[in-house]
Length: 323
Length: 257
Image (cartoon, rainbow over all chains, first blue to last red; front, side):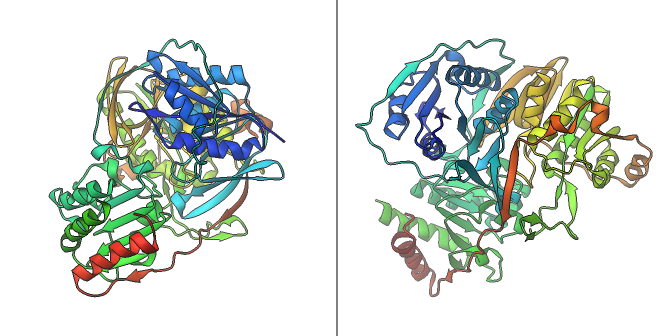
């Protein structure tokens, strides 16, 4: 049965994030011939709204307010609930990003709704949306459906393929006036720490280092490789515990769970808890001195050798290929 | 300061997962306090030591969870509460658990509620924000630093690698991210003392809830293991040859660059 699906796009530092197109693709599945309505919060949203239509949204609702230029729980919850009031969607899809994780459960509680978090796939089975999601950080998966009420889900970035862009597609863009009040948090400052702005959860390529990197200084060659590849830098728990890098880079069951197209593991032995965070990457390359390191059991390609020999050469070789 | 910690008992992160007929096999598995909840317990103890007051750790589960509650008491928490849902035969979900926790907490006096930002088993991270909404209080998720001065909380939170510096007022619910602190191990005297600390068991009746009130909104249809990854190709030769071959394979065979 055709459904009306509300999908929330996400703007970060003025750019529309890819996950905005992925929620549209997920929304199309669930809509089953019904309408996919995009929602965008922030400022200067018109071109982003057009882009969402090019990627398959039937129309887009925007709420432009200075209070929505940065994500805060209160402002975004209020805006989302007001859009829901206006549109009465039968389904809501949001990206499982930093803000989506904060917003979706809160909104679900307010709507007295169930929520499936962190879905990596959705299919329709007998008119019901069935979501697949990782559990135990990807050591296993489960299929989940919503039994009653709004079909509400967050989808993990990088997993649901966006529809093809069609710049001749058109649709209605309407701006609504939302009432934002009683904000309880103030963002004083945002300290940028991510290298070159490539975020781990959305990165197509990740270069990660482990204990084998030996020092904070040892991450330099990895960062150089990442820069050539437009990749994000990650780390194992070993490297974080040894204070070679910040905990925000940690990948694993404690830490971030990532699914890039290419994961290059340098000097990472491959403890179960690390593998849980990255083994669902599409292609894995392992570089390690120890031929018995468990990382080789999940790697598609392995080089047994010293990362300090291999990585700089790899950087040089990629420079030739990518330019 | 009245401090509450919401905690979950989880599989040890070193455990391999075995599934029989769509059900996770718990036979012989080691259980632990969800690692992110350990940060919450540690932070709660530090806050209490600095500002005075009491730390209560609460969980939803069955009597097996008493072990993890005792561990939290041994770390230094003052009181524990188990909301026992063992009698519920139907599957329960985040909606159910947060309903129970909200009902429990709304009758308590709290200045701050702490939890992990996610549980390492289910990985949804829903319960804490749902509880904050249920109580009508503010939330700050994935925090990496916390300072409280009177009614003001100065918080740093991890936003996909960047650090957001936030100011808010109490009462507040926060979820803890790695990097916030180093959770302590229970000391031997701590373990001895924990045996005498109060651990209340509460059921739905005590919370004025019917089973219907906590009926799950979602249903698990199946659980399965991902296809086992085949070990790939280990490249041979000198470093230069290996590097050349790797780049060519990534470009032409795997097509990821």
